[in-house]
Length: 223
Image (tube, rainbow, N blue to C red; front, side, top):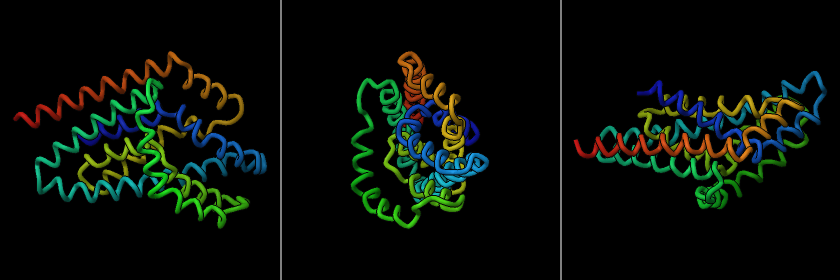
């Protein structure tokens, strides 16, 4: 059960890379421009590693808490399965840009978390070392993002803090190819992932997978 969850999380990160480029691409590009050409890859890798660390921390936190409840209450476990399926549907609609299905969640995260964390930004500027790039990435890993929040609902079903962290690591690694790519490669990936037909195909895949998760959750509820 866990291994397919890792693979699915990686694919979700890969499919959602177009959204990641739109949200964080400008930041990643500025790091590449600000650093020496020889250090470009190092800065970019450090920034994205920082993002991954924050994702893993969030995954461990939500999975650790939810795992305690799920182990004591079967109904809660089924609820988490339904939640993961519903969010998968919302992500599919979001990527297809049929509706701002996750905008409310991003607004909630902005008001509860991000407006406080962004104040730490001043301690990391200017970004003149890989360590600062790492810290900057860790900070921006908490940027309100519907895709990340949806991935966290998957992490919640993993059953333990360690598995939750690895689910989010798999998601982060899925975003790496687009986020670390440079120059013309990044532009081509951006064009590909944001092409209307690409969004429709990938979004449809997520919607069908969400339906599959809901069917499994329903079967658990019935039996």
